[in-house]
Length: 144
Image 1 (spheres, rainbow, N blue to C red):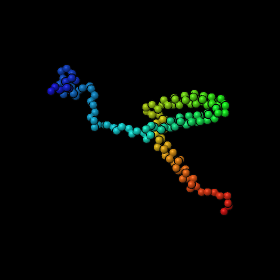
Image 2 (cartoon, one colour):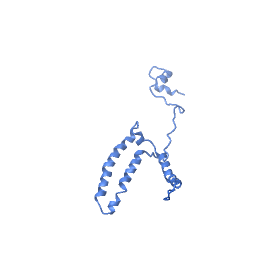
Image 3 (cartoon, one colour):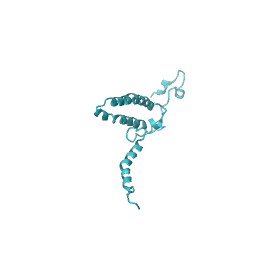
Image 4 (spheres, rainbow, N blue to C red):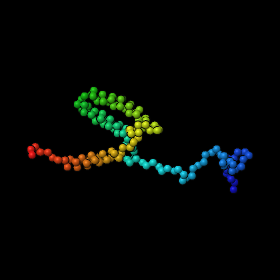
């Protein structure tokens, strides 16, 4: 069998010398520095403060809009459209561009995953508030 290292040998050098002085990078062995794939987020997507802010702004401007529309007013919904569509959307678009910057900037806003905190808050608000209100002391009008 022929030795495949002779392809990389320079003229006038031996195969051993060519294998030591080759300018081609060596491939790492399968067991060296292989890291495990990153763990996926809890909800399969990151719930960042930026995404929560986007949702809150959409709800804050979107929910009140139908009320004046049903009353026949046209100026208020148009103003809300301008505020949301132009000002907020442009500002959030430019801020969103920083999500892909490496190294991360504004990590607390654009990169940290708040899914666990959000889930715990929802569970507490659905169950904990009810338990708290049933244990709360009742005040009466009668004097002691």
